[in-house]
Every structure is written in C-alpha cells, then in structure tokens.
Image (cartoon, rainbow, N blue to C red):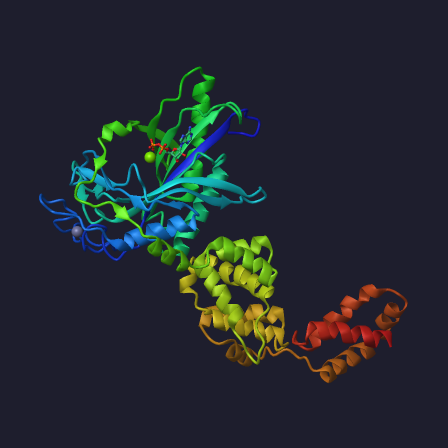
Length: 486
Ligand code: ADP
Ligand code: MG
Ligand code: ZN
C-alpha cells in the first residue's frame, strides 16, 4: 500500500519453530536435517497400529524456556489434543498438538524498526506439537513421494496477536523472535531449511480505528524478505477487491516468490473441521513450581538485556548495540575481542565494536562467509586492536594487517614484522624528520607563520612520505604544531 492510501494493515504471525532436541518428540529417532529419505523413521513416528507416544521432556524444557523468555504465563497444567486431518505426509491421520490449554499464553516481544518507536507485540500462545513429513513432488514425473524423516520432530507454534501494522514491523518481529530462539538454543532459526516457518495473516481496513477486516493466511514464506513481500502484495490485492466493491474471502493463500503473487490454496478450515479431542495416550502435562523456577534461573542473558548492557557498560550507541546483540554468535565474538588482555590493558569497546562491524563483517560478507568460518579468531582481533592502542601501528596500517590476517590466518605481529609496518612513535626520530622538512621548505614555513595555516597539511604529508607512512600521525601533528610555532 502506498503512503497516500487510506487503508491500513493488520498482521498477525504464526511461527513454527523446530526444536533442537536430540530426538523426536514421541520416539527416539534422530532429528538431523538432510538425511536420506525415510532413514530416520520407526514404528512410532510412522504411526504403526498399537504404538504409544512417550513425551520427550527436552522439548517441554525448550518450550518452557521460550515461554519464560517472552514473559508469558506458564500453564501449570497443559494438555495434548488430536487434530484430525488426512494428508499423505501424516501417517497417523492426526497431529498431536496443544489446543485448549497450551503450555504458554499471554507473552510479549518488543520491536523497534529503524527510526520508529519501540512497540510491544502480544504473543497469544505457544503450543507444542509434532511436525508432519514431507511430500516430494519434484523430479518424479507423475508421482509424489513421501519422506517421513521429519514426522514427529517437535515444534513450537508461536502465535502473535494481530498487533503488527506494517510489513517492516512483521519483519522486525520475526528477526527478534529468531534471535531470541537462537539465544535460547531452542531452534536454529533456519528459514531456508524450514526449521523456522512463518505464516502471515493479513487483513486491511479503511482506517486505524475501523474494526478488523477479513483476513487471509499466507503460506510458503521461506525468508523474512518473502514474508514482507507477500504481505505487501496481499494487502494491495485486498484493497483492490474492496475498491472494486468485492469482498475479501477468508482463505489460505500460497505465496509464489518467483511471480511475486499469492494464490488461493484452500478455504479456511474451522476448528470443528479438525474434530479436536484430548489425546488419550498422553497424560496431562504438569509443571511444578520447582521446575519452572529452575528453568527461569537457567535462562541466559537475552538479546534485549544484552543490548542495554552494551549501551550502559560500554557506551555503545543503540544502533551498534542492536547489531552486535542481534546474533548470539556475534555478541560472543565481540565479547571475546574485548576480553583480550595484555599487561592489564583491554581493547577499547567502541573501537572493537567498529572493527567487528566494519572490517570483520564487511570482509565476511564480501566472501559470503558465516562468522563461524572467520579465519580471524576474536582474541587475534583483540591483539591487533591493542597494537593500535599502544601505538605500535596506526589505525590505517591495522586495516592492512587485518586483511592480511584474514587471508593468511596469521598472527598480527608476524605480519607487521614481515611487512615492516611498525609505526614510528619515537619523538626524537619524528622531530628529526620534521626538522629536515622545515629546513627544505622555508617559503612554506614563512607562509604558515603569516597565518596561511592551510600549508599545515602539506607538512604532514611530507613527514608521512619521508617516514613511508610509519610515523605516528598524532605525534606528527602535535610535534609539527610545536615546531612551526617555535
Ligand atoms: P486460527 O486458529 O484460525 O489460525 P487464530 O485466532 O489462531 O486463528 O489467529 C491466527 C492468526 O491470525 C493470529 O496470529 C492472529 O493474530 C491473526 N489474526 C487474527 N485476526 C486477524 C485479522 N483480522 N487480521 C490479521 N490477522 C489476524
Ligand atoms: Mg492457526
Ligand atoms: Zn521414530
């Protein structure tokens, strides 16, 4: 929708997160991604008659941690239900999920899209459920195959309130949620591989205070970018309908990322279509206070708390703190850089924040590498920063050394030595060079003394040239001023 449009959007997201448990939720099968089809299947997850589910408590723990991290209400008693439907990738003919009493209700997540105020987005609920298998349609003319490896993988479904108002807010919400799940170690957040999946519910209305319009649910959104694109398209489609005097029909629509359109997939099911009933083979899920307290005490420092700490403790800007804490691995890297210590000195946090974002991430992005594949470990970057701080090399030289460290995997000292990059910070030497330059350029000295201070830059350039760029620039500046004055 364009800026002038009188319509506004209402968006709610349903996020499915595969939990990082070692094994499936009701059997002992492994959950690794990418195994050959149907090699991680047993009678339980293939739903042979007579099998019984045994709940994997690691999955409960992960949902509980997540519920606490979003400040949600933890239901002391929750319940599993059967959701019945028929689909080739669902061998049991039903999905075990939580319906009436989910493990978590009434949570929240905060978003702060660039340049906009911080907003609270309500989270209606988190429930635990099982994933289905996968139907494979590609490369098999005239047939579909079913892979049951994914069947029985534990999922969390995280349902937001219809609190989001723009595609940017939806993107931000998803980014923050993914970051949180990764911090908690409960989901790897990989949208391409489908371990994090998002359905977007979108409706439009004529103004901010009108009642909500009829919504459509969008599926097949395999990146944050596609979530945002699909919402934009869908809102425009709905506005088009309304402007034409037609009605929006509540339905599920499939996003086609190549064509950039959504297409009707199926009409909206109502709850009664699924004939929910309590799962007879599982007891109620009861959480004791002790268990909840223990989970709360074991929560790691979460992105929001870390962001505030970076601002307070290190004096970083809100922007820098957000970038560095958005990704847990990046935050860990940054903390290891500034933890590098030599003779009681540590790298200065602001400069470390700059180096990590500009030099390190810049180079990694150019090479298409993940942080985990960085050839420069954090301690080594820390050492480089200390060499700048103690004047051994200039910031400019350090950039060259960093690139060489990245390419060779070597220590900074070796590179500095081999390239003869040591900075000259010795007063006597620099004074000697300055004296020579001043003596060789009496006319310029005269100009300077008559107030044409522009020639100062000329002298700096000459001294740097004479020392092959190795003179400490700050010292050159200071000494030049003194000597020109006197
Ligand atoms: P269902 O059970 O049919 O999926 P829910 O009530 O659970 O329906 O809502 C699903 C999602 O749709 C939630 O994320 C909710 O925020 C969102 N939603 C509900 N009403 C609207 C609306 N009018 N416009 C956009 N999103 C909505
Ligand atoms: Mg739903
Ligand atoms: Zn199994």
